[in-house]
Amino acid sequence: MPKTTHTTSTNTLSSLNMVTAIRLSKAVMQLVGCSRSQAEQYIEGGWVSVNGQVIEEPFFRVTTQTVTLAPNAQLTPSEPVSLLVHKAAGVSMESLFIGDYLNPDMRWVNDITKHTPLKRHFRKLTALLPLETEASGLVLLSQDARVIRKVHLDEERIEQEYIVEVGQELSTTQLRVLQTGTTRAHSPVRYKVSWQNEGHLRFAIRGAHLGQVEELCQLIQIKPLSLKRLRLGRIPLSSLPMGYWRYATTWERI
Image 1 (cartoon, rainbow, N blue to C red):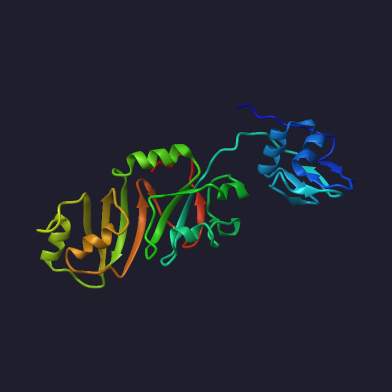
Image 2 (tube, one colour):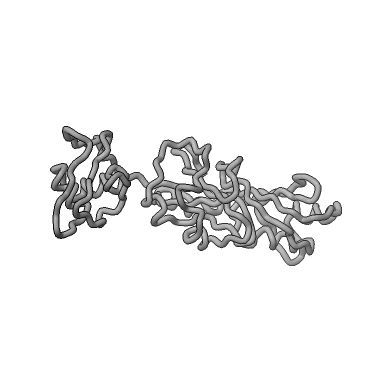
């Protein structure tokens, strides 16, 4: 869709002087000469300021305030976004949406995308391949129906990588049981396990469900001390700090 720009002789659209408050979208319609949908798109795109403050709500009421359209304002399609979050242990998936994670202040300073954080980026997000409350690590949230559909279709094939603290050395027999993934009471599952370093195991599991790693550790009667997800498919946690988030890039594929 081609970009559309409404230009005016000055950046400031108007200093309204009305007794009755009107919606910001209506004010922009009157002042720019655009349709309602275009006015809402300008506002939700972060292009409109009221008394110098960016307002992203089309229903915001204005009276005597100065309404300003950014000089570089453009009407571009509202593209859905996907967010990658480094969740801390003890934070439930539900808490991600009501806590301090999803706000512009917690965006990773090294995020390489050119997105300007907008309120609409934190709405209608779906948590994909959720993580246990007691676990830390990479979480994917998305508004993009294509991403959501892709993950649901490929869920059993997506490999997830975990680092598990076991706090002790395993015997050769214990490690072999984990590597084969089978006992008399359990059938094989699709995963690989190896030593990451002393006291920590690395699991790479396809089609992992909540509680999967703990179930595997129960094969050798060990309860994990900590659990951290380092990778979702081809997307690594990398150096994203705990408690922060970044936008997924257009070229990242899970």
